[in-house]
Each structure stands twice: as C-alpha cells, then as structure tokens.
Length: 145
Image 1 (cartoon, rainbow, N blue to C red):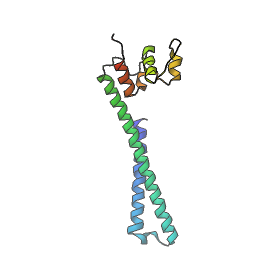
Image 2: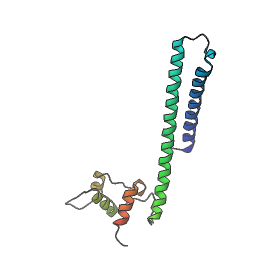
Image 3: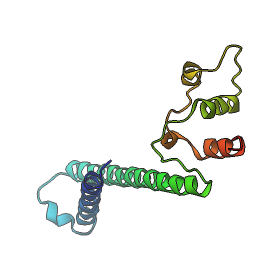
Image 4: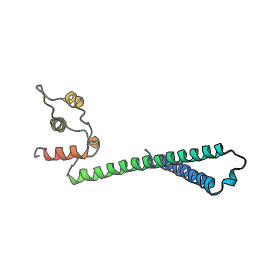
C-alpha cells in the first residue's frame, strides 16, 4: 500500500475516533446540549458513538499492523544481507533452491525434479517471497560454490 493512501486512511480513522470521543463526552458531560431528544435518542446516540469508537480503534490497529508487516519486510531484507545472499530480492530462485525447499516440506519424488513439482508444493518463485525460515534453511543447505 502506498504511504499516501495509508496516511489518508489513518487520518480518517483518527478523526472518527476523535468524533466518537467528543460525542461521548458531550453526552456524558453536557446532556442538556442534546435538546428535546427522548431518553431513547440519548441511548441510541451513546450506542452509536461507542460503535464508532470501536470501529475507529480497530481500523487504527489494522493500519498499524499493516505498517508493521511492511517494516518486517524491511527487516527481512536486512536479514537477507546478513546471511550473505548476493542476489537481488527480485531474483528468481534456481531449480536447486526450490528443490531444497521442497525437501524441507518433506516432499519426495521418483521422477526428475522440475518447476511443476515446486509449484505443487507451493514453493515461492522469487527470493522476495521467501520467509526467514526458508532463507535460513537454504543458507544451511547450500552447496559450496
């Protein structure tokens, strides 16, 4: 997600949170400000404000989680370098690397290993799609060059 979109969504969620807090404050501290409304209207307004508050808080948490996932990807790239991987993140995995990852999952085959076997086992095609565990496994099982 582009940062501009993330910022807009976060600003919107924070604004909704502020509105909900303000509404709850007005209802609890200045009930005369609601005018000729019935008690039921008062309760409905309070319930709606609480729902809006919960919704806004959940949206903020989700957006923060998405940002953390993005930061984790940055951490993953740093770990790539720490493991001494020379290739760029966008490089396609070699057939041998995909074979090693299949063996990590317990895959066995009688015929020659090929790309369709790796696809069936859900092995990533690009290095950027690897998890840290897969990177470590490949690093531990790589053949000396």
